[in-house]
Image (cartoon, rainbow, N blue to C red; front, side, top):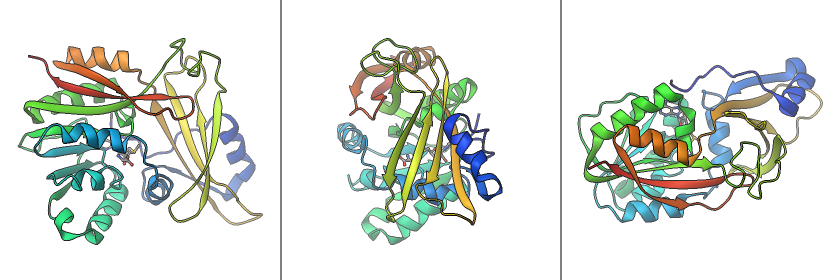
Length: 279
Ligand SMILES: C[S@@+](CC[C@H](N)C(=O)[O-])C[C@H]1O[C@@H](n2cnc3c(N)ncnc32)[C@H](O)[C@@H]1O
């Protein structure tokens, strides 16, 4: 249900690279104490879905609950809207990074943010929010039981007329996992090189075999040298198409009011769902 902080077995080319590194490889979950600063560095400059999410939040005045807030990639832009934001996150490492960022932020932002360490599949904050946000396709980190808990908790925390905004990595064209936007068979393992906020260069392997309900993401440093330890981070996440999510939400008394397409990221077409409580 909750995020597993024991790294899974790494498949594909990333697994072979790990084997080649042998004892030098130190494998971590991407959100554990060692992985968190790497994920933070890797993702900090990523602006994916920020503009679209902030635009939708702007339409519904009131307090915001952000689930799976991480180190605040979305939290800071939400605070910049002038809202009260409660940022909920399970990983102690990620939450510490967010608290550090808030401590350095201007007081007018910091004073409107509360951080909470909790599991998004089971939380009780004792109040309601006009907007609940779950970005970065993080709903796919939960299994079916975890998602049922999430939907129930969202219903408990959403104010009348409020909006639940969540993104998922949609599957387009042929509808089959492993197909790209044109319906052609996508490569099983995509490799993306990215420069982190620190200037460090990373190589991310995204392993998604056709028909698989999960994908494995593994982040290596782009250069590993000839000796010394090499920190590698990995996570396995579900692939949750918008249609499936919409029918799960409907079963939990939540209605998708509209789908907002997000810019494509390689072989995925992410979509932002705007959800309200079923009348
Ligand atoms: C893909 S990251 C997104 C973080 C942030 N929203 C961003 O855009 O950078 C997913 C986050 O979900 C957190 N997470 C995973 N499972 C969780 C759970 N069950 N409850 C709360 N947070 C969870 C992870 O620790 C991680 O910080």
